[in-house]
Length: 222
Image (cartoon, helix red, strand yellow):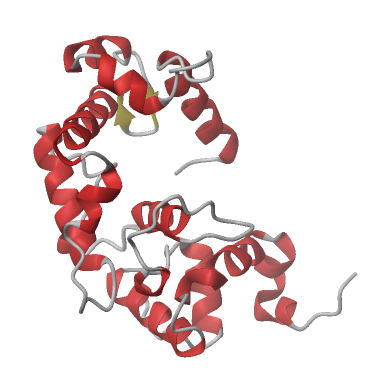
């Protein structure tokens, strides 16, 4: 959340504090495994990104550290809450967030929103898209979360385009709206309903689409 340049600057700062990219054994997991929770708080004391503070970031990383110690990986923690009969990942995501909040010792609403609170959880659903899908866009390192259960990461661009396409009539980009849009995509691709997210969201970011509305979908290429 925020401008791309701002996001990249914040990500680089946190990764720099963690020493990522400094050679063998410099990955985020290795860093968390060797760094005590109180060390995280001290190292991130001056960090801010919009309304997320260094204290909150340290609490999140400490929670991830504890989750990995207990479950082996974040994927294992998430998969433990995923039932075979679940149509979407929302049940597992609700449990995942509750567990991470417990491990972090804090609610962290800006970093760990929950479907239980009615949030569309755009950033967490985007994270799950990156983790579960495997193609030229998404790296998909996770193997236990089916792409068929993913939910559209709903932002203002997808919301505008989906309303124009008749995928939802809701007036607010909330969780129910995200589920309606996902259901529309699932009717086309039951195995991979969020495959359309990247292309349509990028289209929504295009100034021509913002100016012309859905006319940009049928405009001749230039």
